[in-house]
Amino acid sequence: MSFTSTRRIVVALSLAALFAPAAHAADITFAIKNSHPNAMRLELYSQDRDYVWPGDGKDFFLDDGETKQIPVSCDEGESICYGAWVDGDEETYWGVGPNNKEKCDDCCYTCDGGETEEIDLTP
Image (cartoon, rainbow, N blue to C red):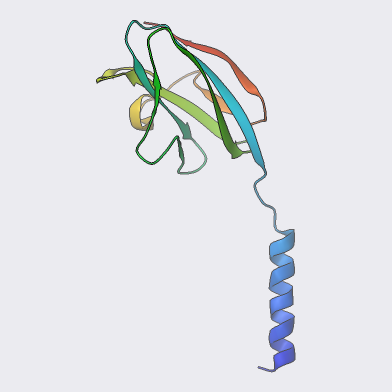
């Protein structure tokens, strides 16, 4: 293959990468209130890719009565579900629960640059 042919291929691949559709970054803020008398743990799970917030084996901690604003960076249009559980009791959970294992009717939100309504986790 000649140098000119190789150069043309590299230019063509570079242009293809430049114009390929890419996921646009966005943000969403989850407003979560713990109305349970016990502290709870919470994670946010992407339903469109293998991603968890905060990630790295960590979770968000909400003391009893605490309200927390949790901003996350995500892909625009991505579906994100919350999973919360009582600290030390994974059988008492909200949303998709620990490790995104459960089904839920109204615990998922679309990453669209906004903020959720206050999500009140009650006993």
